[in-house]
Length: 261
Length: 281
Image (cartoon, rainbow over all chains, first blue to last red; front, side, top):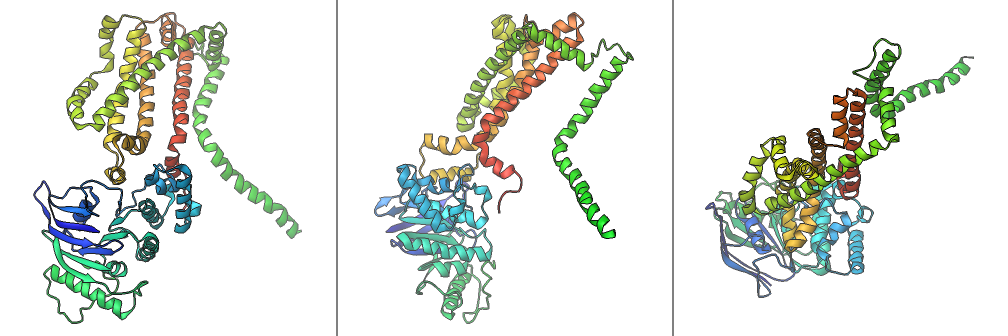
């Protein structure tokens, strides 16, 4: 279990990014963190990853305090951040360097086949499309089998069509080992498609505003009324978190309007 | 009949259309040779016709003969060896010093604040100003020459290495951190490959300066070396020998530069994929 206890972060320049954020996230759970810009959601994720230290509070994973990057925690960034001097295969195997070559090769080959990128094994990252590159980045993070995978707006740079593809693809990969996923996003659609729980944050300073459980089976139908219903709840919570007065009944949003702020 | 002429003329048309296009593809690099070659040929003809004696500007054939004579007598080999040894020794010293100090300054902020201002101040001194000092300190023989070349090589390498390390993408370094790379692993797996392209450029610039400074060093006084051939040619009024030495400099400079490029090519293949034509998808 991943336990976030009263996490706070104040940057040296005085920006109060995060205040007393607490959550308990079970193994295998998918949690989406959503909020307006400046709500500290990326700060939160970087603290969980151990890339930045929180100013106060603790992150514990299975009773181990996390203050630096940990083998059980993987992270995927907004950009693929592939190493341009490594082939696609070597990029995927980047986190496996301590394993014997044979085992490593087998894992990479299996992953490439699963990604549908077997023919790109020897390609350079430069030769991949944006969607393919992000796919490889996801694989790179998942191949070492982390217990927790953190995703920092992983699909926000992609076009809507590729984004949907990759969301489904992520769920596919997730189903293999069922790690815990913590996903930061500003896309309501994405949060409702992927998450078991959506945590809505409120900005300045960033803190937890509301928690919405998405009681929908998988795979989820993006066009079902039930799906719409959850989306509306998240949107309403978001609006209230930003102190916008929106009538509770029937706010009019189009499906594509995920980034209306 | 009309049909016949049509079918007969058609291939001719496509051929004549295709050939200039194809020629252009092959000929484009050769196009640059047109001017120097026609100038050389023109001068050869003018001198050959007796329109000029070509005493100060010898025709290509005379330069070539001089070169051949020097080569036959073994003189050329002696001078080339002397110069090449100096350049390589100075280059080696300059590259090692520049790489080590550049890496320290790039990697370690405190060292940069301590070291870099001094290095930058020294860099502002025209390197030839060191010559009298080096001769006083190190004598008039090989050591002072190698030292001067090393100074010339040092600065571009130092700057290149430091700048390259400073400009390594922080986001990629973060990937290394997320995968918990140790310090040495971070250097080996992230920093070195990231720095390599800029390092190769720094080496090439450094080598170019090395060739420049070997001439300076040898002009100051040497009993052998291509620079000595230059001075000797000037003092004895042998312009063909000067031209011959210049030609050898050009060839050696180009070859050594090319060797660096060839040696680095397998390590920089990932870059070619992106600078090369088109690229997939």
